[in-house]
Length: 210
Length: 222
Image 1 (cartoon, rainbow over the protein chains, first blue to last red):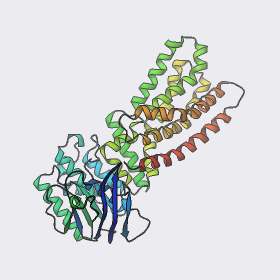
Image 2: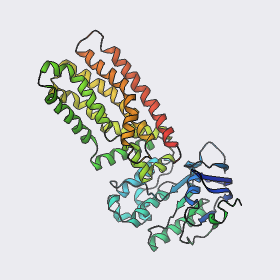
Image 3: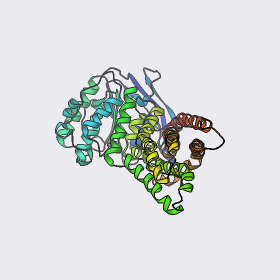
Image 4: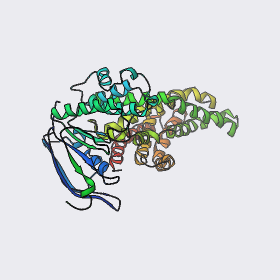
């Protein structure tokens, strides 16, 4: 990994959606090579927290700080893999991967074929994404993590639709990412079973102001 | 940064061409308007010839609006807008790349086809090149202004109508100067250059303001 994020600090983050208080005074700290598994019932703010970390949503109050501190916004440090997969039905997996590589930082560009191979999509490289199954689409979405290297991975229900083989692949990639000094924040209802992830139960602090 | 810009232009072109809503849709719509007008106002060549630049410009404006509302909405719906907002490329350039891809598939074919379609309206031969020029210079303004409406309504379901209503008044200066430049080429008291240069100015301003306005609209939290 060319760049690493040494530290990510969330200080008393509060999130409101409309009139509704989603969570208040949420603080945590992540250092290079560590991760956080977000758990808690529906509507407790797991996705909102991920979107705040991704720079897509502004917190109502609270501070998000990261080191090394420079001009690069947090959004450009991280990959956000949300529930909506961001795939175009008419484009093939090979075209998607080539687009992500092209859109990313071009200092280090992996081979598109190798990215597809790593996610078990080599045989489907030329099949339009609209023809892929749910799990195959999910694999393709996750291939974005390999196509361009970014230090923070923000994953929203990463295991959705994945078969056991793909789950193993993802666990291996996550372990390699953490070992290389990356950060992971993942929200999941299924236990992830990944090493090196602390658990943050949003259900217990939501609105309680811990 | 150039490679990221081009990657996005290429993707948008590929998606538009595959879906089939690319160049041909706008062109056929344009042709439909041009084809029915002589039936509505009668086959008087003199009258048609006088109205031709205005009709071609109105047709081009409506054809540009067609499909423009999906410019950002499709990306907002499938989640790729999140990815574009987090990309290395500044959001202003992202918007510019999407506007360029849209123009290549709508404005450019319209400008090139307008002189040929103009023969159906007995457009004077002398006016063909100036008309194509005004459309070539004016359609980027239409795309840019329309893109702002598309960005503002990106997260609204069925925002297409709202977007058209929002941007149509803003497109009027482009239409006025585009038509007056095309008409000045056939005859009249003002030289072609005067309204044409104003049209160029409107277009340049619209591209720059449009890119920043789109980015500002897309940055609004969902």
